Amino acid sequence: MERRLKVRLIRLVVQVTSFFLFNLGFFVMPLLYWMEGWILPIDIGFGSPYTNVSGFFNIVEMQLIASVIPFFTLGITFIIGVIAGRACCAWICPMGLINDIVSYIPFKKAKFSQELEETAYLLPLILLAAFIGYAVVDGFSFLVSDFVGMEFPSISYFQYGVFTSIDPYNTLFSTIPWMIIRGEFPNVLQGVWDFIARNPVLIVQVILVVVFIGLNLVIQRAFCRYICPTGTCMGFFGRYKLIGLKRDPTHCNKCKKCEEVCPMNVPILKEPFEHIGHHSCDMCLECYGACPEKALKFRIID
Ligand code: SF4
Ligand code: SF4
Image 1 (cartoon, rainbow, N blue to C red):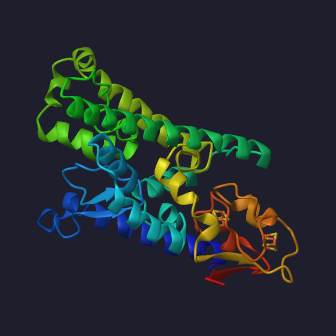
Image 2 (image 1 turned 180 degrees about the vertical axis):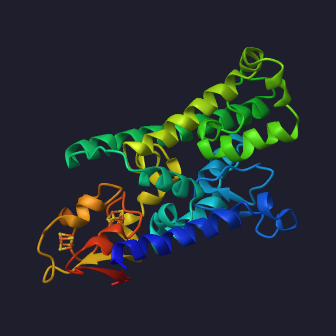
Image 3 (image 1 turned 90 degrees about the horizontal axis):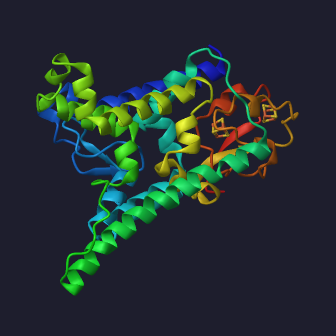
């Protein structure tokens, strides 16, 4: 079997296994509590009736809004980030699996120049700052209200934070299942327009699910590259991660096949050959599998 296909198959098996494990409650109800409480740097909403793992950024948002400094969550993320950077995005994140599957659908994909890619990287940075900024201000307003003993005007439009409210994984695996459990969907049968009028927020959330997931059809892993705050945070560890890839300059003929297949549009040849530590690299190993000279190799710590 072609090396690239083999690598992709192994990754797909790990991704699907993780998906089932993280949503164990959905498939095997009695095992729901086995993993409950785990916090991982992946995009997975909390509060789902079936999901037994919590996503890093969703927890950070919730804790900041509750005026709690998320030391424990940040600590776990720091340890995982230093070891493997944003490898969780490509190997165990359930949203990453969904994005990958849609990306695999044969459709002409846009390939941006490196200059445009670096400019586009501003978007996830701005979004990350906005998500955190909102949560901090919201949490702080509660603290101040408590301290001065008077009701402060609340800005709590987003009970669980801005990102969690628009997070497609949260909508699919938490918001909608809860509505079904609470019996709110039979309303649809009473009239679609009536349902839409009574659930405007849900309609916006569903539109965002379609947009965020659909984008992968034309831009590989678009959601991971330009929106996901968890992936953006994990990318900060790229330069310092202990496990990664390196390029052997004595074997590399600069054919650029690795760059062509990279779903994160990493400028591999511009990276130091001893360490591909770009903030977008999620260790998906597509480049490793595609290199005809086997010039890409694993590096651990060195
Ligand atoms: S695919 Fe391999 S040989 Fe070609 S440029 Fe990339 S690392 Fe070098
Ligand atoms: S550089 Fe290689 S491992 Fe990193 S994201 Fe691109 S294809 Fe995947």
